[in-house]
Length: 313
Image: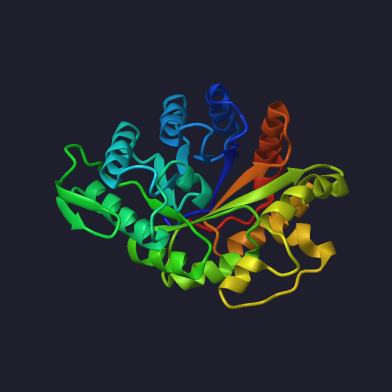
């Protein structure tokens, strides 16, 4: 992922959809003309790297992002080995996303480390170096490897983005990864603060709660419940973690934390995210019916993307 290249646009395969629908979804995204498919790996829904491989296999052009692999769910060497295989089979089309994983889920599977930040940094550092072809011996707090080297490292190495929102997690990203993956409910102000903290040009993938409709009020109503889940409270909590407290009026919450409305409304909201530092905007359609999700993606590609002011290549 080139942080200085043109803005890219994608869609998330929501975890609620059964895995047998993924192939058709990926083809829909590609046929619509979007750039990326993003797949989540949440316990205990469906295996992420398996799904990424399937999406890549049934498409020929789109990039497929793993967003995200919990760092502690697999041994670092096995994570690198799996990612290397995907990257070699589909060169230049895979983005590796890594994060903490939800603490309660990691506890359920016996993988919750004493320090999630240390585990995240050690894992990403080891995975990146193994993907680069290095031979590693590591005696860390979480990662322990003895003379490990991949037989088939990929070339080029896939970009590694990290799903974090707090200042210490962003600092880890700056040290050992390529860029950020920011979750649903991320405001333009937070995107700007997070990318500034990285301190260098870096990819920034942003998931956005999305609804487009000829009736702007209907679209905004469709995302309101999800906004309350991802961005609760009267202040921009993620921005506050980075040192800036901003109170958000109830009437402004949807506009701040989602992309919703008529096509021109959605384009303006995406312009704000891109201006703030987003290099990839990935829509999460806020409807439950799979067919309706696919239709939202088609409308996004056909009616919204052409109105967005893209960053020049």
